[in-house]
Image (tube, rainbow, N blue to C red; front, side, top):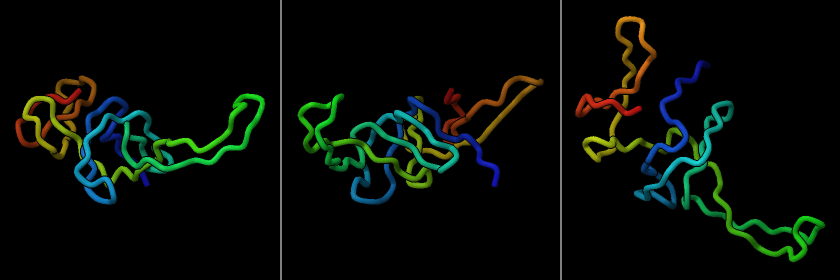
Length: 107
């Protein structure tokens, strides 16, 4: 299945469902092959690590876990609302992401 790149790194998104529903954050990383993204300070899980040469102390750390892209929706910079996107290209230009509510440019 071909995957459109609707969401990119540094986009501001809102979580639509799950334990962090309604939280807003910035995308730190996108993994298109698994259709997931890591959002800043959202979906925090505890990771237990043993002491090693790189981490002398060991212990329990809180890290962000990936979320499915279907559970995220982008926030438009112009109208400050969660929106759906459409792609537009004019006169051979590069494809651009456009807000469906205010027709503003997202990129």
